[in-house]
Image (cartoon, rainbow, N blue to C red; front, side, top):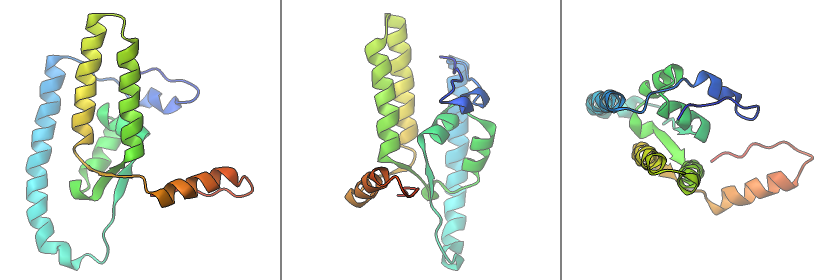
Length: 160
């Protein structure tokens, strides 16, 4: 499923494309295995040095960054690999957007081959989402978001 840049999503032009075949699956599995090994080493180092860290940084991946990660965008991969897995999160909004998109594609599949391809990619997306802790949307954030949308005189960013 090639990516196409649109006016609303020009960033897709730089996302690259990864073939959906057995070799790519093996390659992605090898990367995941390497990352798990690295994370195990990092955890042992982290336990030794955690006490000396003055604060704990969290990095939240939004839907666009997660999509680039799934497409193995070099800059995104480099940035994610430079952080502890425990420091990276996704929001439940990102999960909703990802899963809703795949469900939409499932409903619009025209052939058994398309259906199979979408199910395969959905399975991979869910596995990817399971890599990180998911931060649920809080009532406070939802209320802040609604008031921000209603108040057009100020420009507030909603953070989680």
